[in-house]
Amino acid sequence: MMVNNYMAGGGDGYAILAEVTNRTIEVVDLDALVNYIEAKGEVNPQIEGRITKVN
Image (cartoon, rainbow, N blue to C red):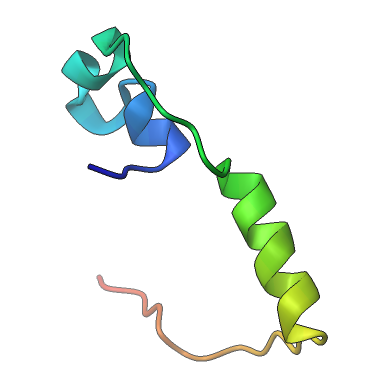
């Protein structure tokens, strides 16, 4: 099973995952992001309008 570092540390109510003793850490979240950006070569962030305010 693969989870991000936050969940592996017990975040979002997954406290049981923090108790795991035989973890295999291949890539840390930040390293995965850096690898992606380096492979992509260019990042062009734009406002996508995916978040909307709800009253």
